[in-house]
Length: 180
Length: 97
Figure (cartoon, rainbow over the protein chains, first blue to last red):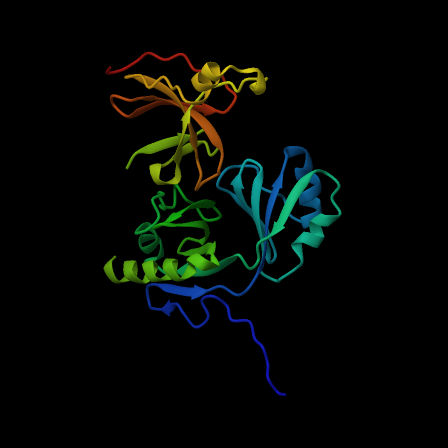
């Protein structure tokens, strides 16, 4: 036999690595969309091992795991070590919905001094440091695609998008990088 | 770009993240089956559509995804107030019109 099957990531081998701008596909990660009321928040935080943020546009992270505030009762939990997040929440009896979206989303890491400018070409939010500080995250638009934007450093962002949109998002970013 | 204050995100966000969702404060009849055709038509199809202040539902669909209510002046296209779904209509002085 000797044949092997191998999963190909949506942006495998894509991206670009310039001096002032790097756009690289992120490593595979497990992701969870979590919907829960305020009452379930504490138990879910304990089960996940981090505090689910309660303030708009904020994140909390611990080790390889991070929770991004998406809405008043909605979070995107990302585990870059690939832990089973659904299993982590399964023992919480409080009413909640935890949906694994590990393969629905893919991510790219955008970094470098031009990162914010290039993202601003498609994202209508104010990405200056005082309006969108390090650690801020928000669901927003990039061109015509919905993304979740997370500022991981002054010059570094993680862009989460649906895998079917990733080609468009990357191409738009490439076009912006040429123009900006 | 038009900026809209989202009462859940508690800040102004670009218009592109929002979607209009019809007139606000329309109470769904408790006993739909008992409505006459004329009453159903009034509830289902007839909207006020005034020149001046309108109360509308909006959804921050590409942000926090919440529905909220907004008072907007249809003459100036200015948002006068936004408030959470379920909150009463705010008292407003009209502008323009």
